[in-house]
Length: 418
Ligand SMILES: Cc1cc2nc3c(=O)[nH]c(=O)nc-3n(C[C@H](O)[C@H](O)[C@H](O)COP(=O)(O)OP(=O)(O)OC[C@H]3O[C@@H](n4cnc5c(N)ncnc54)[C@H](O)[C@@H]3O)c2cc1C
Image 1 (cartoon, rainbow, N blue to C red):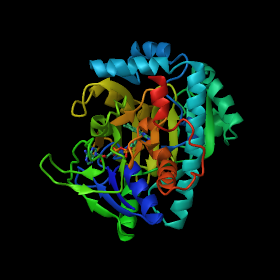
Image 2 (cartoon, protein in one colour):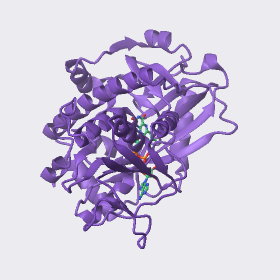
Image 3 (cartoon, rainbow, N blue to C red):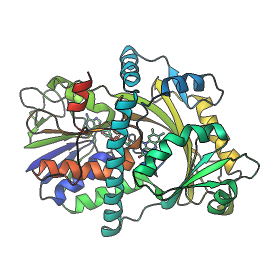
Image 4 (cartoon, rainbow, N blue to C red):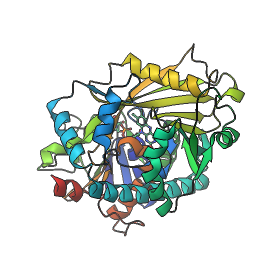
């Protein structure tokens, strides 16, 4: 089949790879000049299936409100638009226990499968990228410990491997952790990892290209047309090119692409920040990934760099940086790993937009329009979910049963809730 993939973020590239592996003729269209220039550019890089949970969860609305009163709040509203307020309403509706439990189960299943698939391909294709093994969640006080308990029992039920440890044990795993910062407990996930999403996406893009995938960069695709939904056009007067199948992997911009087909996706941008700096002194730097549960800030070791990432901002735009949110990242880094990174010079400060659906899981599979497929809305966990989603979508397009249960991961989930 001739397949067009729209978007060359981590989702589009993994999808293109899986499709060419299954014998299709694949062309990728990307409006930037390179792959992974959008949300896949400088994320935290965390792959922790147990932590891939919906942000819509019981008690979350109150939790967000209390956070808003704090100085270093991980959550922020920046004059949300009417569409964003409607999204927040849908998010709040999805916070009930029944919906949360269902969506958490779906995400856990998908994230575990995705991690397996990523490991397999990393080994098989020799995907050498900056990665480190293990993930440590730091609980500063009893408050964080109490809040995390329900998630721990769910992770235990799901058979995930983790261990609750004390501060001394945490410092054995991450010897550079600053002993002046109070640490009540930590949770260690030995099988989880952090990795460089952009680097791996670029490596996989090159492999896909060598297998025959064609790439068109600086190609801003027009919204799909109701009469000819599988015709790809670069501008309104372009006669375009027709395909047997189109897969929309355009992250946040998937909504306007699909809207003329009558598919109204409740996608919102939840902005976040990262700072990346060179390691100054390896002995002072993290060995792998840690997460400060109080501030929801992840600190990741990516080769010779340290990346600090966090923040959830609704409203505003990508160009405007909120200085206090960035300062929180420096502060948390300094709390745990003082002197680890060269934060005085050439720090890369990045703001990205998570393509979020209100209830958590992405949408992947058929769109309801023949030949138009979806792989989008991966929110805060697109890197962790990418390999699994790509394989499951490619399997379905090829007419093979996916290796995992895709119940609740298709568009019908959103229709049922609207
Ligand atoms: C601060 C932050 C930290 C994060 N940390 C993590 C983490 O630790 N672990 C994790 O799993 N996830 C994390 N994420 C989320 C993850 O980065 C995203 O879920 C993922 O990158 C989404 O990938 P994507 O390919 O769907 O989107 P993108 O990377 O944005 O790719 C979509 C592409 O489509 C292109 N496009 C859009 N419209 C068109 C068009 N009309 N024509 C052509 N091309 C088009 C865009 O240019 C873009 O390149 C984080 C996100 C942020 C912001």
